[in-house]
Image (cartoon, rainbow, N blue to C red; front, side, top):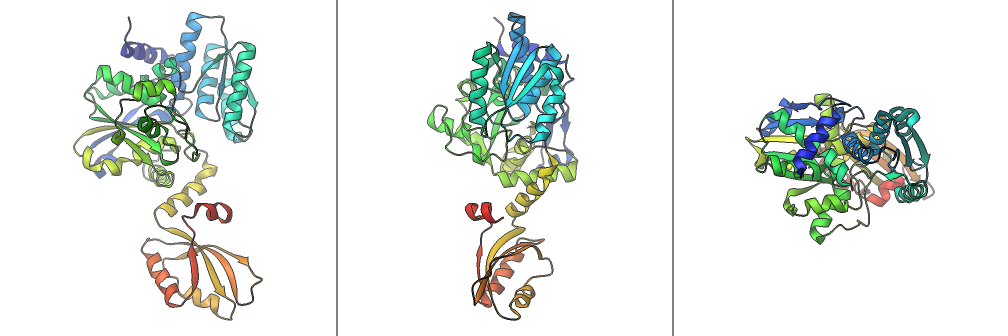
Length: 415
């Protein structure tokens, strides 16, 4: 009977029909910073700029090997899985029907269509992913097609394990630590399953977005649970419920080995990798690098592999990423200021700003009051400590203000 590592190696070998192994690159910038030997497994450099192609290809290959006539595949996805399946459908010359939410950005729809060509049909159904998924599964049953899950499928997991195969082959020796992003769990289950057989002394850390920590919730409960709320910013890993099949392979993971990356902090990492290294990562692709500061004391002198899982980043989101990064770093704040309705009040306020402070937003919210007017004001600065000086001056001058930077409800409506 073929073991999991042998199956993963066969999947990896078969993938060479599509693309060569993705680079495993030593990163000097990060290695110097942390006093470690840090390598990036560049899954953002596959033909579809994510590892998802591996699992889609592996699963489709096995289905077609056992039933060549079963040439219709269906999936529900708004992102990387859709593109991976589309690419694989074109490679195998089979039909694919891809369901996407109506709200999917046109850029993602267009890229999926390019990868799939005439082999695929895209159907836009539902405002939310749950509606899209239900429609895809109903359609799949009606036409007797094969539903291709993004992560909850043994064959998909086997394909994702090829990342681990390449890491060992390229590094030439087992790493001390592999840092893996986690969404539905397919990548983590595949790589850990392979390494358990081939490099049992290698350790792992698992990184989830703070607003979608489905693995941590499942480990705490002893079974997969559905999160009541998910922050969708890290869209490639924001999953409300980890897959049953991946969790069955990951349930021995220790809770302290699961890390949560705040969405806004991930933005700082994305900008640093872009500006310093010239590497374009999507939010999920930056997760493994983002937690390095938390692990600094543990990784010194060790060989560490960070899997950068994807680079499908729409640059129209760059202003949002910069905004989130500035707010997390304390370099940008928003206030609601009660401005006295008297001559010179605005000039008085402006005089309180320091030489490194800039007004990024100024908007009257209420002009009808006789004595005061409410103003929404956004301020950028070059050092977070500058805000302490500003608020001290505001307090001394008896200006009434409220910092709403971290007020989720107000920020959503006003900012």
